[in-house]
Length: 355
Image (cartoon, rainbow, N blue to C red; front, top):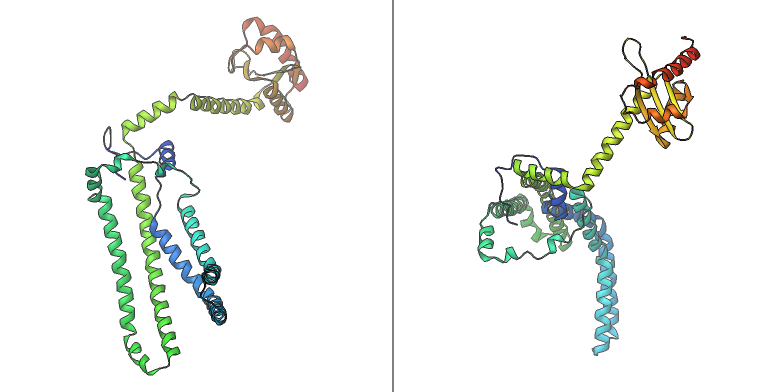
């Protein structure tokens, strides 16, 4: 894939959550093929070490069955087809666990790296890739050069491991001509297993390095210019859905702050049906009683609940509650209501033993 040309300067800013999600929707995620290769190769080796005995017994039974069937076999088209189908079916049964393991490891290794992701975007035709000039440029791109280096490094390391292991056991191989065929087979099997085990170890190391590199490469690719950040912010601000989400979050935060102020109120004035007003007055601090919280319906009930938990008096006065509900939170009681509010506060103080 050709790299996007930066617009508005160098890509120095970390990717936003929206940009990450856009990349993910396009199927552009940090996924290392080396991790899948190493996991598949290693787990197949481990599984094979347990399954080889079962595999050998089933294969021996299949060969015996074929020999027995050949005694009465007639080379007619129908019997040839039956024998072929029988062999295919039995081979499929024997190899099914290996094929199943390949599928499971492929899915698991992919999920480990990128989580659950299903998108058809990478399958969509990209006619820009049909441009021979652009294709020639990608062939000599930095990404292609790195992929070639990684492939050559992997082949070189694996070849060196195999060669060095064979050299270590070369003298033992020479004396196998004087041993029994079974001993020779055991020697070959042990040496091959040792080579494969070493290959697995080097593949795991390469997969780890490649996984870190791919993650870093994707982070670099997703980085944004300052101009891109500004444009994305403008788009997000202009989105009605995002605006409504922001307003909802702001309202929820304001409601929580308001509820936190209720325990500091002196009295709750209510309309018995659906209004609650929390008032506070601190002599020498407040010029007039302050409305610290207000609400209707559910919020009103919540204010009353907090008031009961904090032993704050609740006074029913529908006309005053309706009038005070028109005042913003943090606002002072208007002068024309001083007298009636003062009577309520005096009654509250007398209940508390202050009057």
